[in-house]
Length: 292
Image 1 (cartoon, rainbow, N blue to C red):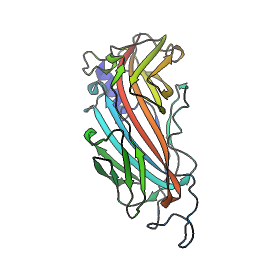
Image 2 (cartoon, one colour):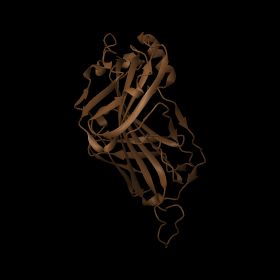
Image 3 (spheres, helix red, strand yellow):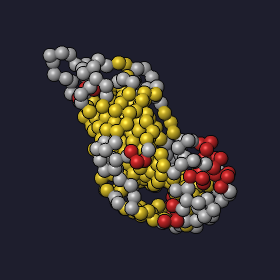
Image 4 (cartoon, rainbow, N blue to C red):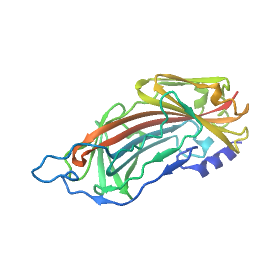
């Protein structure tokens, strides 16, 4: 049973995603002169800060039972950033509005004209720092969980620019209910009952200024076939109920991967690019259960 599930997930994505990721990203790169905002001329005030000219994403993923999904490690922490000519679109518009449920979730990226800001970025927290290297049109780094400074101000430095991009990180969890969804051994994973009549999850700490999303990926009882999924959003208020209407189309005994994720999205005004930088902090926990 577990073997079939592992094979399916490994075929889907390296980050245990069970939803389709759509990326539409053009690669027309444009270099900007050091210290001069696009469109600005010496002796004149810089143009107003408009639109979005960058995306910074810090993502932490924790899998309760890595062996259940064909992964080698429990924790993954990734930093990614990109810069581009200003657009009115965002990289987080795919997150459903608060209070909505959907079975048609598509993670999308807007089409942008990339900007080359150098070969690397320096990312500094109050205790740790790391370097994100250029990979194609993006900047990427994978770090250890011990290098992630929680509830902390970070800065991102672009070569030849004195101005820094700022963002604020998130904390982890003191508890998640039901606790059975966090079992780590494949021999007793998938034992948390997920009620088809409506299922409430709870957690702490919480912060209502953030968005919370719960995605339930439902598989056949033997784990060989993805039957569908349901994703619901709400404020990060410490609890959320998945309604019966989102679950009753699935059969009793179906296996479930439970994705709990916090999202904190901000827009930082960055004068050198005369635009905002979209910062996206995401913390995801993946557990297991079965429909009851």
